[in-house]
Image (cartoon, rainbow, N blue to C red; front, side, top):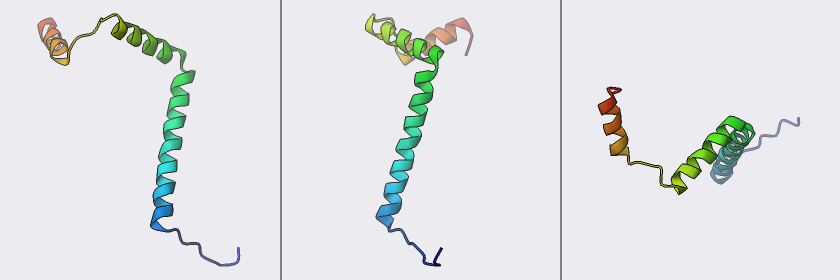
Amino acid sequence: MSGRKVILSDEDRALLLKVSSLLEEILETLDILEDKDMMESIEEAEEDVKAGRVRSYEEFVEELKQSGEI
């Protein structure tokens, strides 16, 4: 190297942080997509939502209280 220093501007650093974050999200998405069990769970959950097999947070908490889990 010639001993020359390269200084990044604030905008360059901000852009690098955004790109780094986006790449991390892409890698996480790819990990999920290749996990067959995870994808099956997501598909089942989407089917439950479409079929109306859902409950509110309050209902869920009440169910846990009644079962003695909390």
